[in-house]
Structures are given as C-alpha cells and as structure tokens.
Length: 251
Ligand code: SAH
Figure: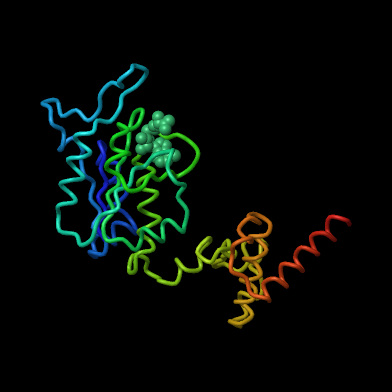
C-alpha cells in the first residue's frame, strides 16, 4: 500500500512514520509511506504555499497550485487503480474503525494536511475524493490528524501487526469494547488477576472475556450494543447484567 502525505512540515510525518509499527512496516516493504513537501510543488520564487484570504480576515489560506500539482504528479506514478485523495479537515466525515477498514482495502491514499485557516475551497471542490475529521476540535495543522488516520489504517493492512489476530479482537472491530487484559505478576501489591485467566481452561477464559467485553460495553458505551452483532447467549448475559445493575441500584 502506498500512502503519500502532502504537508509543509514533512519532518513531523517522518518522525512518526520511521518508528515502531509504521517504521517496521515500511522497512518490510509492506507500506510505502512518503512525506511529500508541498513547497517542492510551489510555483513562485519564494516557494509559497499560502496566501491572504480574498475578502480579508485573519490568517492565511493554503494555495491551490502546490496542492493540485503535487496530487497530479503523484497520481501519474505507477500505483494501480485510482488513489483516494483525502483532505484532513474538521468539517469532514468523522473517522471511525469502519472508515479505517474501508481505506485499508485501497492501494493508494493521498492525504492533504491543511495549515492556517485551511485550504482554498477549490481544492475541496475539484480535487479531493474524501474529507475526514478526527473529532470535533480544532488543531493547528492536518499533520497529527493525518498520522492518526494513517496509523488506524496501517495496522489493518495484512502483515503490519506482528500478531494478525490482535486487530480483530480489539475494541470496535467486533462492535464491542475489548475485554480487560493482565500480565505478570499475578499478584501486584495485593491486586489480583482474575483466577480464571490463570486456569489454562481456554473455553472458560473465552467465556469470561466475552462476558467482560459485554459488561464494559454496557457500562461505558451502551450505544455500541445497538449495532453490535450479538448471539442469544450474549443477550442473556446482557439481560442478567442489566437486572444485576437494577438490583444494585435498589439496594
Ligand atoms: N478554519 C478551519 C480550521 C483550520 S485548522 C475551519 O474552521 O474549518 C487548520 C488545519 O488543521 C485544517 O486545514 C486541517 O487540515 C487540520 N485540522 C484541524 N483540526 C482538524 C480535525 N479535527 N480533523 C482533521 N483535520 C483537522
């Protein structure tokens, strides 16, 4: 998978993409992530990538030319299929696991990082295929949002995570929050690991984990239960948890 990140701060992107999981996936040749400096595509002698807004007002706006020229140059390179051209913007579609899964199936993503007041509206109208937000708050640039997006997508690409199963059991992938995890020691300052996890009984452990997953989803994110795929046994467990809670409230 090829991911090009268009930015005026390529070092921010490099700092993250050369470390840990992303760095390893890059070294293994599974992910080809590149930080593309928009200044390299500027057309004037000052290599400017932003200018004052028409109509006045505070701040600067990212110019069309460098962004269009960079995207056109990258689209012409030999990656099969059409790229998804993604603008990071607080006005975009909210990133979630489903969207990350969808993007993990693509061959080529081009991600545009805004700065200042944002980008010229014509980039949004005539160049991008997707607009993505990482949440209802404003950051100073699209670099951190782009990295959040890239990391959420990259770990779903086969071969990127060491243990393939972990992406499947994690929170949201199954529609529920993940169960509680413990590691050695079994007794830390008197805080004990649940006995069943030490039992070696895999069927019991699986049951405990499913129940724990259902219980924490019910407590923390009951909204997820409306769409999560549930078995009859899950529904029974939930009914029991709800009635236990109702009894607890009365006592
Ligand atoms: N004036 C714009 C915000 C500009 S913030 C507005 O009100 O909509 C500067 C840049 O940071 C944006 O162009 C975008 O690329 C990035 N950015 C800031 N917050 C973001 C968020 N929540 N999600 C995605 N990108 C964001």
